[in-house]
Length: 403
Image (cartoon, rainbow, N blue to C red; front, side, top):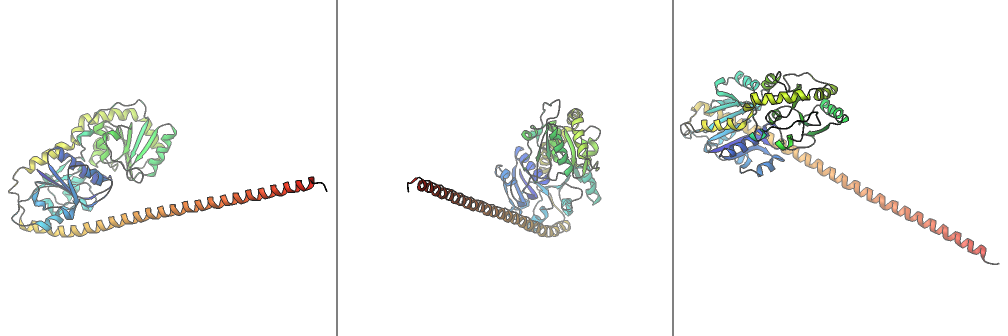
């Protein structure tokens, strides 16, 4: 089966990028031929793609989407391609329209939701938003931002918390300050994410830490790996994930918005240390009761089965197809605008780096010149001392010579 994955950007390790990357990996595991195209591609994800057996590139280079069996479509990219390749006589692929946010406009699938396939939401909150825009509830499924099966493992827990990871690309100051307080008590705290270290979260990475402060997709990783997780970030959060707050946190994609009140650094640090043992018990019980819903592979297996049904007879009525194509023209303009901005940002960043390097080189040159001048001054001083010493010896000699 040929699978196509479309998304707006593939560059940094962030929500939609990781979803697209993990879906590609899982489709490969399920025996599919996988192509992945995006509006913009950059590092570090480009290197990850290079290690996979997938064809990837910019959307403009994507083949005819009607040649695929199944399409995982994020960010309204697909209508742009359909507007280029549409004809009345082509059967339609099975389309999974993905919505990863209840408030980002680019996450709404538009008229493409009427094409053969299904709309997939990452949470109940997102589902409700899709329904409010007229998408039939029976055409929407929730995949709970599910994670690859490699995250399913059991782990040994320390009696006392010793290491904590802050995993976020937008860490609030109170969390950073709480980390400093924890370090004063001997707990090791590390930050993964922008603007510091950008690494992909893997089971091996999670295994280094006794607990994690995070929101979003990393929470599913933590549930499957039995890693106690403290849900808190830029929107606030409930703190330790427990059986009592699990349901409400899940409904809003573990974003922390289920409990939008802010905590102080003292509250965060004390709650982390005081509630650690209870958090261990809670994460194990949550995994046992709900873990299966956070496994990605079963969701994609079902999509493949759905895609095999009626493959040569899928059609879209002509008026709806034309609406989708018109939306696609607008999507293409938006895509180009985004790419131009991203490339401009990269050029600015590159110029900034080059400027910093030049400043550094000038600084080094200045230091070298200063060293040379100081050496000359030292030599000059030594020469003066030598002259004075010779003059003094000469004077002594003259005094000792009989008159």
